[in-house]
Length: 151
Image 1 (cartoon, helix red, strand yellow):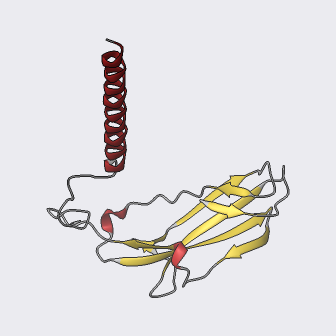
Image 2: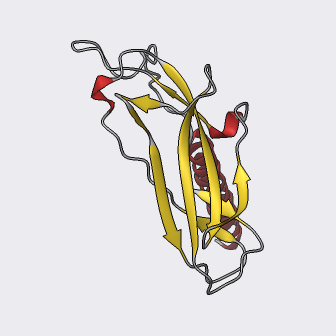
Image 3: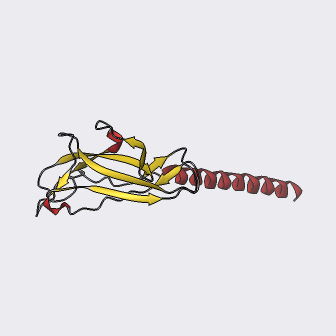
């Protein structure tokens, strides 16, 4: 997702993205090919967001890498904006190669059980029920005393 500001609604723009290797500062390659993506869009409003989708075969990646997304915005053939900061943590993604037979996600540790997120609800409900029971007993006792006084 790429955010933009101050574009001219109804005008066609092209957004070009390239993945960069954070360590080398060069374009990230899968095989001999740089990983690039393009999206053409026509904004309805001056400010908004659009998507640039990167697609590549990651099965050949054998080493972990940190990649940074660079974007360049064009109106026609004219470059009008770019975001190219190799140290931007918000644009950085870590790639971890898949090793056959090993889990693809890190071990999250022991699972937590016994969710108590609605415990306050049950305590409040119990307090209301107890209050209702107490009021009922009080009213019953009072009515009983009134009846006993009239007999």
